[in-house]
Amino acid sequence: MGFPGERTIDRRTLARRFAATALATCSAAAPASASHAPHSGLPGVAFDIELMVDGSSRSASCYVPSRYDPAFAWPLVIAFHPYLQPNRSWDRYVGSKAAAERHGYLLAMPRGTGALCFRSFRNDPAHQPRKPDDIAFVANLVDAMANRVSIDRGRIHSIGHSNGAMFTHTLATVMPGFLAGIVTVSGPPAAQLPPNTIPTPVMMVHGSSDSITPWTGPSPLTPRFARYIDVDTTLALWRQINGAVAEPTVTQYDRAGDSTRIIRYDWPAPPARAETVLLRVENGGHRWPDLRKKLYFPFTGEQSQDIEMFDVAWEFLSRQRLQA
Image (cartoon, rainbow, N blue to C red; front, side):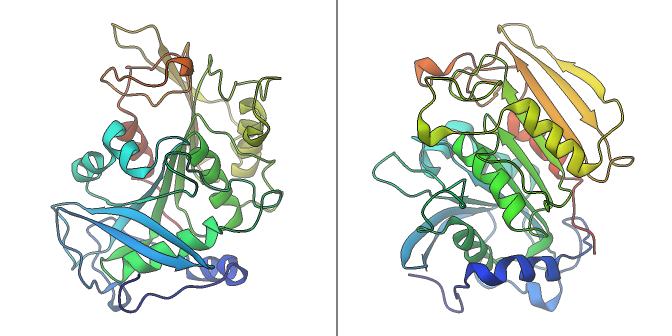
């Protein structure tokens, strides 16, 4: 069930609503307006939100950092888990709540639909059944959180891995004016970015030896449900949308002790309309980069230990905000 004051909205109003309410914002230290008045969020507390959306029961795990002060509007990161690793399992694996505590942002981890651990998000609404409606679920989840904590609507970001990354691309294209920035790991979009996609700060992270979502696109062994656009085409589309036409700045992460290195390409804004970043994980597989070596499915390839992914992601997202 939901909390007092929660309501659901249909998808037909989403794009218009979020485009109309995109605000120029301040940092997490900006005073909250009356519309941001919190209700029951407590610093340093994890809680669940359950909603009925479009006839389906949906849930998310949420976290409020210990430094939270309801007098200010706070950035929100929505983190989307991969297939086979639902939100709670993924949180334990990547430390998403610890990252929210470390960096000081609100966190929501939606749970995909499916049986047992076989949970996912509908990352291609045009070619997949409408129900369950993940887009409407996310919109209602943010409203539900806003009933409890003080959210800066101009600093809502999305991070996703694999299927969750594919859905993050979808969210950025279907709900213009909703996300201030996105970070995708091992998950290009399931379909071509629509021509009306608005400039959106994007950081894409992908392994050069990813066998699940190969850099060059689906292989004959790729399951039909995992169709997606190749990394180079996706990057070219985002660069075109974001006006990232200049030569990039190239840097490298390479810690001793593992078999990978990360080459980073930055197209800053300005001169681009929105910041665009690619992290190519040389010899990396379908893995979440982490400073600590972690066990994972053996067929997913090498994990990079060159960066802590949430730290690099937040360094990028922390400077992104919607403009009026």
